[in-house]
Image 1 (cartoon, helix red, strand yellow):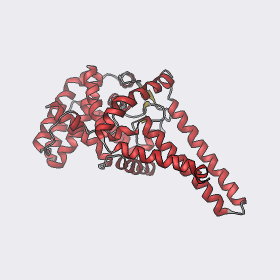
Image 2 (cartoon, rainbow, N blue to C red):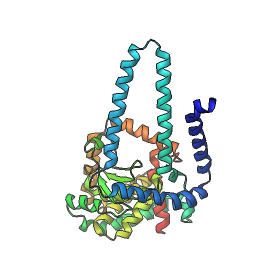
Image 3 (cartoon, rainbow, N blue to C red):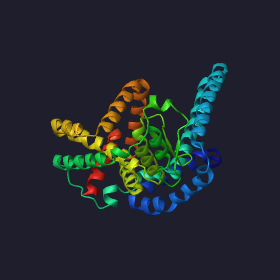
Length: 334
Protein backbone atom coordinates (compact mmCIF):
# COMPACT_ATOMS: atom_id res chain seq x y z
CA UNK A 1 0.00 0.00 0.00
CA UNK A 2 1.20 3.56 -0.72
CA UNK A 3 0.84 4.57 2.96
CA UNK A 4 3.05 1.74 4.22
CA UNK A 5 5.63 2.54 1.58
CA UNK A 6 5.80 6.25 2.35
CA UNK A 7 4.74 6.39 6.02
CA UNK A 8 8.07 7.92 7.11
CA UNK A 9 7.67 10.86 4.78
CA UNK A 10 4.00 11.30 5.67
CA UNK A 11 4.80 11.32 9.40
CA UNK A 12 7.63 13.79 8.90
CA UNK A 13 5.50 16.13 6.82
CA UNK A 14 2.66 16.03 9.38
CA UNK A 15 5.06 16.81 12.25
CA UNK A 16 6.83 19.60 10.37
CA UNK A 17 3.57 21.24 9.34
CA UNK A 18 2.15 20.90 12.87
CA UNK A 19 5.25 22.51 14.41
CA UNK A 20 5.19 25.30 11.85
CA UNK A 21 1.53 26.07 12.52
CA UNK A 22 2.03 25.91 16.28
CA UNK A 23 5.00 28.30 16.20
CA UNK A 24 3.08 31.02 14.33
CA UNK A 25 1.23 32.12 17.47
CA UNK A 26 3.81 33.55 19.90
CA UNK A 27 1.34 33.72 22.81
CA UNK A 28 0.50 30.06 22.30
CA UNK A 29 4.20 29.19 22.24
CA UNK A 30 4.72 31.16 25.46
CA UNK A 31 1.85 29.61 27.42
CA UNK A 32 2.00 26.02 26.18
CA UNK A 33 5.65 25.47 25.32
CA UNK A 34 7.89 28.04 27.07
CA UNK A 35 5.95 28.02 30.36
CA UNK A 36 4.61 24.48 30.17
CA UNK A 37 6.54 21.93 28.12
CA UNK A 38 10.06 23.36 28.09
CA UNK A 39 10.58 23.50 31.89
CA UNK A 40 9.77 19.76 32.01
CA UNK A 41 12.15 19.06 29.11
CA UNK A 42 14.82 21.09 30.91
CA UNK A 43 14.27 19.07 34.09
CA UNK A 44 14.83 15.84 32.16
CA UNK A 45 18.08 17.24 30.74
CA UNK A 46 19.13 18.26 34.25
CA UNK A 47 18.45 14.74 35.56
CA UNK A 48 20.33 13.07 32.70
CA UNK A 49 23.29 15.39 32.21
CA UNK A 50 23.33 18.15 34.82
CA UNK A 51 25.28 16.12 37.38
CA UNK A 52 28.13 15.34 34.97
CA UNK A 53 31.30 17.42 35.56
CA UNK A 54 31.91 17.54 31.79
CA UNK A 55 29.81 18.38 28.73
CA UNK A 56 27.96 15.35 27.43
CA UNK A 57 26.75 17.49 24.52
CA UNK A 58 30.30 18.15 23.34
CA UNK A 59 30.95 14.39 23.31
CA UNK A 60 27.74 13.84 21.31
CA UNK A 61 28.82 16.54 18.85
CA UNK A 62 32.21 14.87 18.46
CA UNK A 63 30.64 11.45 17.88
CA UNK A 64 28.20 12.95 15.39
CA UNK A 65 31.04 14.55 13.42
CA UNK A 66 32.95 11.24 13.39
CA UNK A 67 29.81 9.39 12.31
CA UNK A 68 29.20 11.81 9.43
CA UNK A 69 32.81 11.60 8.24
CA UNK A 70 32.80 7.78 8.35
CA UNK A 71 29.41 7.68 6.58
CA UNK A 72 30.70 9.99 3.86
CA UNK A 73 33.75 7.82 3.20
CA UNK A 74 31.60 4.69 3.15
CA UNK A 75 29.21 6.29 0.68
CA UNK A 76 32.05 7.39 -1.60
CA UNK A 77 33.48 3.87 -1.55
CA UNK A 78 30.10 2.24 -2.25
CA UNK A 79 29.23 4.85 -4.88
CA UNK A 80 32.43 4.22 -6.82
CA UNK A 81 31.64 0.50 -7.02
CA UNK A 82 27.91 0.84 -7.71
CA UNK A 83 26.57 0.13 -11.18
CA UNK A 84 23.48 2.26 -10.48
CA UNK A 85 25.11 5.45 -9.32
CA UNK A 86 22.10 7.74 -9.64
CA UNK A 87 19.91 5.34 -7.67
CA UNK A 88 22.58 5.09 -4.94
CA UNK A 89 22.88 8.86 -4.80
CA UNK A 90 19.10 9.36 -4.53
CA UNK A 91 18.84 6.78 -1.74
CA UNK A 92 21.67 8.47 0.17
CA UNK A 93 20.06 11.89 -0.22
CA UNK A 94 16.75 10.48 0.95
CA UNK A 95 18.34 9.09 4.13
CA UNK A 96 20.10 12.38 4.70
CA UNK A 97 16.87 14.37 4.27
CA UNK A 98 15.03 12.10 6.71
CA UNK A 99 17.85 12.42 9.23
CA UNK A 100 17.93 16.21 8.94
CA UNK A 101 14.15 16.42 9.36
CA UNK A 102 14.16 14.28 12.51
CA UNK A 103 17.05 16.29 13.91
CA UNK A 104 15.14 19.52 13.25
CA UNK A 105 12.01 18.18 14.95
CA UNK A 106 14.05 17.13 17.98
CA UNK A 107 15.73 20.56 18.07
CA UNK A 108 12.37 22.35 17.97
CA UNK A 109 10.81 20.23 20.70
CA UNK A 110 13.91 20.23 22.92
CA UNK A 111 14.47 24.00 22.79
CA UNK A 112 14.07 25.62 19.36
CA UNK A 113 10.44 26.67 19.79
CA UNK A 114 11.67 29.25 22.28
CA UNK A 115 12.70 31.33 19.25
CA UNK A 116 9.01 31.99 18.67
CA UNK A 117 8.23 33.41 22.12
CA UNK A 118 6.90 36.99 22.36
CA UNK A 119 9.60 39.63 22.25
CA UNK A 120 11.22 40.99 25.42
CA UNK A 121 9.66 44.45 24.96
CA UNK A 122 6.23 42.83 24.80
CA UNK A 123 6.81 40.57 27.79
CA UNK A 124 8.30 43.37 29.90
CA UNK A 125 6.03 46.17 28.62
CA UNK A 126 9.01 48.26 27.48
CA UNK A 127 9.08 51.54 25.61
CA UNK A 128 9.33 50.71 21.90
CA UNK A 129 9.95 54.21 20.56
CA UNK A 130 13.05 54.81 18.37
CA UNK A 131 16.31 54.97 20.31
CA UNK A 132 17.74 58.49 20.69
CA UNK A 133 21.46 59.30 20.78
CA UNK A 134 21.01 61.15 24.09
CA UNK A 135 19.46 58.00 25.53
CA UNK A 136 22.44 55.90 24.44
CA UNK A 137 24.84 58.51 25.86
CA UNK A 138 23.08 58.48 29.22
CA UNK A 139 23.10 54.68 29.32
CA UNK A 140 26.79 54.50 28.39
CA UNK A 141 27.55 56.89 31.28
CA UNK A 142 25.58 54.67 33.70
CA UNK A 143 27.42 51.56 32.53
CA UNK A 144 30.74 53.45 32.82
CA UNK A 145 29.85 54.32 36.41
CA UNK A 146 29.21 50.63 37.06
CA UNK A 147 32.58 49.66 35.61
CA UNK A 148 34.31 52.28 37.79
CA UNK A 149 32.44 51.03 40.85
CA UNK A 150 33.22 47.35 40.37
CA UNK A 151 36.69 47.54 38.77
CA UNK A 152 38.48 47.32 42.17
CA UNK A 153 36.77 43.93 42.63
CA UNK A 154 37.81 42.48 39.26
CA UNK A 155 40.31 40.14 40.86
CA UNK A 156 42.65 37.77 39.06
CA UNK A 157 41.93 35.92 35.82
CA UNK A 158 41.55 32.67 37.78
CA UNK A 159 38.91 34.33 39.98
CA UNK A 160 36.98 35.42 36.89
CA UNK A 161 37.12 31.83 35.58
CA UNK A 162 35.75 30.48 38.85
CA UNK A 163 33.02 33.12 39.01
CA UNK A 164 31.92 32.21 35.48
CA UNK A 165 31.30 28.62 36.55
CA UNK A 166 29.36 29.82 39.59
CA UNK A 167 26.78 31.82 37.62
CA UNK A 168 23.37 30.48 38.58
CA UNK A 169 21.18 28.95 35.92
CA UNK A 170 18.73 26.10 35.66
CA UNK A 171 21.67 23.65 35.46
CA UNK A 172 24.74 25.85 35.74
CA UNK A 173 27.44 26.14 33.08
CA UNK A 174 30.32 23.89 32.06
CA UNK A 175 33.66 24.46 30.31
CA UNK A 176 33.67 23.62 26.61
CA UNK A 177 35.64 20.48 25.76
CA UNK A 178 36.71 21.90 22.40
CA UNK A 179 39.28 24.21 23.97
CA UNK A 180 41.26 26.54 21.72
CA UNK A 181 39.20 25.39 18.70
CA UNK A 182 36.56 27.81 19.95
CA UNK A 183 38.98 30.72 19.63
CA UNK A 184 39.42 30.08 15.91
CA UNK A 185 35.68 29.63 15.43
CA UNK A 186 35.01 32.91 17.23
CA UNK A 187 32.60 31.77 19.95
CA UNK A 188 32.84 32.65 23.63
CA UNK A 189 30.13 30.24 24.68
CA UNK A 190 27.16 28.27 23.39
CA UNK A 191 24.07 26.40 24.48
CA UNK A 192 23.75 22.76 23.46
CA UNK A 193 20.09 21.99 22.63
CA UNK A 194 20.85 18.27 22.34
CA UNK A 195 21.50 17.95 26.06
CA UNK A 196 20.36 21.25 27.59
CA UNK A 197 23.91 22.16 28.66
CA UNK A 198 25.44 25.64 28.65
CA UNK A 199 29.13 25.79 27.74
CA UNK A 200 31.71 28.55 28.13
CA UNK A 201 34.96 28.79 26.17
CA UNK A 202 37.37 29.18 29.08
CA UNK A 203 40.17 30.26 26.72
CA UNK A 204 38.54 33.63 26.04
CA UNK A 205 39.83 36.78 27.80
CA UNK A 206 38.91 36.32 31.46
CA UNK A 207 36.82 39.47 31.93
CA UNK A 208 34.27 38.25 29.34
CA UNK A 209 33.61 34.89 31.01
CA UNK A 210 31.14 35.74 33.82
CA UNK A 211 28.82 37.66 31.49
CA UNK A 212 29.14 34.95 28.83
CA UNK A 213 28.15 32.39 31.45
CA UNK A 214 25.12 34.48 32.42
CA UNK A 215 24.19 34.81 28.75
CA UNK A 216 24.41 31.05 28.12
CA UNK A 217 22.50 30.19 31.30
CA UNK A 218 19.73 32.51 30.02
CA UNK A 219 19.61 30.38 26.86
CA UNK A 220 19.37 27.35 29.12
CA UNK A 221 16.32 28.83 30.81
CA UNK A 222 14.51 29.24 27.48
CA UNK A 223 15.64 32.63 26.16
CA UNK A 224 16.51 31.61 22.61
CA UNK A 225 17.12 34.95 20.86
CA UNK A 226 20.58 36.41 21.40
CA UNK A 227 19.14 39.82 22.28
CA UNK A 228 16.89 38.23 24.90
CA UNK A 229 19.76 36.19 26.37
CA UNK A 230 21.92 39.32 26.63
CA UNK A 231 19.12 41.11 28.48
CA UNK A 232 18.29 38.26 30.85
CA UNK A 233 22.01 37.55 31.31
CA UNK A 234 22.52 41.12 32.52
CA UNK A 235 19.58 40.78 34.93
CA UNK A 236 21.10 37.55 36.26
CA UNK A 237 24.40 39.35 36.82
CA UNK A 238 22.57 42.11 38.71
CA UNK A 239 20.74 39.56 40.84
CA UNK A 240 24.00 37.84 41.74
CA UNK A 241 25.24 40.95 43.60
CA UNK A 242 28.74 39.57 43.02
CA UNK A 243 31.12 42.45 42.30
CA UNK A 244 33.34 40.38 39.97
CA UNK A 245 30.36 39.27 37.87
CA UNK A 246 28.96 42.81 37.92
CA UNK A 247 32.27 44.16 36.63
CA UNK A 248 32.13 41.76 33.67
CA UNK A 249 28.47 42.57 32.91
CA UNK A 250 28.86 46.35 33.13
CA UNK A 251 32.01 46.38 31.00
CA UNK A 252 30.36 44.23 28.33
CA UNK A 253 27.29 46.43 28.29
CA UNK A 254 29.43 49.59 28.20
CA UNK A 255 31.18 48.25 25.09
CA UNK A 256 27.81 47.69 23.38
CA UNK A 257 26.60 51.17 24.37
CA UNK A 258 29.84 52.94 23.48
CA UNK A 259 29.92 51.15 20.13
CA UNK A 260 26.39 52.39 19.39
CA UNK A 261 27.33 55.90 20.56
CA UNK A 262 30.35 55.88 18.24
CA UNK A 263 27.98 55.71 15.28
CA UNK A 264 26.37 58.99 16.41
CA UNK A 265 29.23 60.87 18.08
CA UNK A 266 32.68 59.31 17.78
CA UNK A 267 34.32 62.13 19.76
CA UNK A 268 32.02 61.58 22.72
CA UNK A 269 32.53 57.80 22.55
CA UNK A 270 36.31 58.22 22.60
CA UNK A 271 36.03 60.59 25.56
CA UNK A 272 33.97 58.10 27.60
CA UNK A 273 36.45 55.37 26.74
CA UNK A 274 39.28 57.41 28.28
CA UNK A 275 37.30 57.54 31.54
CA UNK A 276 37.44 53.77 31.96
CA UNK A 277 39.62 52.53 34.83
CA UNK A 278 43.08 51.41 33.76
CA UNK A 279 42.29 47.75 34.46
CA UNK A 280 39.27 47.92 32.14
CA UNK A 281 41.31 49.58 29.38
CA UNK A 282 43.89 46.79 29.71
CA UNK A 283 41.12 44.18 29.48
CA UNK A 284 39.77 45.75 26.30
CA UNK A 285 43.22 46.05 24.77
CA UNK A 286 43.90 42.38 25.50
CA UNK A 287 40.49 41.46 24.04
CA UNK A 288 41.19 43.30 20.78
CA UNK A 289 44.60 41.62 20.50
CA UNK A 290 42.92 38.25 21.13
CA UNK A 291 40.37 38.81 18.36
CA UNK A 292 43.08 39.90 15.94
CA UNK A 293 45.18 36.84 16.73
CA UNK A 294 42.44 34.33 15.97
CA UNK A 295 40.64 36.15 13.16
CA UNK A 296 40.77 34.20 9.91
CA UNK A 297 38.79 32.12 7.41
CA UNK A 298 37.43 29.71 10.05
CA UNK A 299 36.09 32.57 12.15
CA UNK A 300 34.61 34.24 9.06
CA UNK A 301 32.95 31.01 7.91
CA UNK A 302 31.49 30.40 11.38
CA UNK A 303 30.17 33.97 11.52
CA UNK A 304 28.58 33.64 8.08
CA UNK A 305 26.90 30.35 9.01
CA UNK A 306 25.65 31.57 12.40
CA UNK A 307 24.34 34.81 10.89
CA UNK A 308 22.21 32.78 8.49
CA UNK A 309 21.08 30.52 11.35
CA UNK A 310 19.97 33.53 13.41
CA UNK A 311 18.15 35.08 10.47
CA UNK A 312 16.36 31.79 9.85
CA UNK A 313 15.26 31.75 13.51
CA UNK A 314 13.38 35.05 13.85
CA UNK A 315 16.48 37.25 14.21
CA UNK A 316 16.75 39.23 10.97
CA UNK A 317 19.55 41.39 12.41
CA UNK A 318 21.86 38.37 12.42
CA UNK A 319 24.91 38.92 14.61
CA UNK A 320 23.66 42.41 15.45
CA UNK A 321 20.93 40.73 17.51
CA UNK A 322 23.36 40.90 20.42
CA UNK A 323 23.32 44.73 20.17
CA UNK A 324 19.55 44.82 20.58
CA UNK A 325 19.97 43.30 24.04
CA UNK A 326 21.73 46.52 25.05
CA UNK A 327 18.62 48.48 24.07
CA UNK A 328 16.50 46.18 26.25
CA UNK A 329 18.79 46.71 29.24
CA UNK A 330 18.77 50.47 28.58
CA UNK A 331 14.96 50.63 28.50
CA UNK A 332 14.58 48.34 31.51
CA UNK A 333 17.14 50.26 33.60
CA UNK A 334 15.12 53.47 33.19
